[in-house]
Length: 69
Length: 266
Image 1 (tube, rainbow over the protein chains, first blue to last red):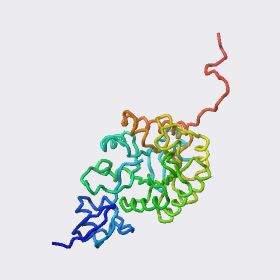
Image 2 (image 1 turned 90 degrees about the vertical axis):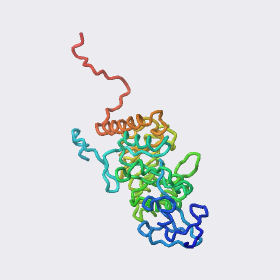
Image 3 (image 1 turned 60 degrees about the vertical axis):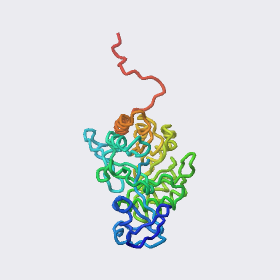
Image 4 (image 1 turned 45 degrees about the vertical axis):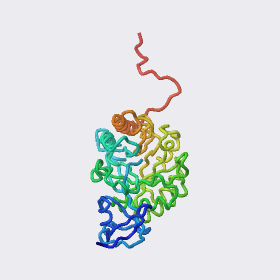
């Protein structure tokens, strides 16, 4: 079994075995093409989500579009 | 002068913002609706080609919930990401950088609020954010006070559209100061859209009769008893107001002037 790491995702702690941001987003049941991710305070370009490696203690902000005025 | 201004039979009265051309002069929000289906039906009825959207954290605990994009296709309708809820330039800039990554486009709506009670914009922070965003290649359409000087400053800061409030956000009070809106329209080289304050169809018509290029609204449609019918009313009123502006209204008189001839009276 892959090594589990602990991330802070949208303010909450979360354990995962995902190696990349794209894998983690899919693990959540979301499509990487429909979200934007901030990785330790920096925008993670969508084109690089498949390659963006996660390490223990990383902070992620995952956002998407919702209704608004 | 555009074609439509010189030829009343020409029905092409499109407008352009940051190099993108649109036919509808009505931009609608996507907040406060009962559900996504009603929201999508209202957008359809409004004829709007641009909708504003907010940027928020995904719900990690229940990511299977339906999302806006399932109902309003961003390939057919232009999503205009906003910074609603941001009270500093830094928050607004961060939000729009994320929005650009989520959507992949530069046309955005910037608003930096001053306080929760009035939701009035903080213009110092708004202008600062506008400069930073424009330098990063964003095309900011900017919510602002109905102040012709602030509007000029925003234009200098790189705003691609000036969007003064007609009245506080969500108030439905209609355009409170027609003089300042008209002054902004006269002074601006970029499109001017009234953003906020519209309550009913006549308010939207007033904005267009003042010469605005468009109107942005959310609550007036979403909180109507029949939002889909109100969306249609807004479509018609924006068109009517625009036509009236292009037609050029009659002058105002202090006293009566009969419409029937005085000559030949029996």
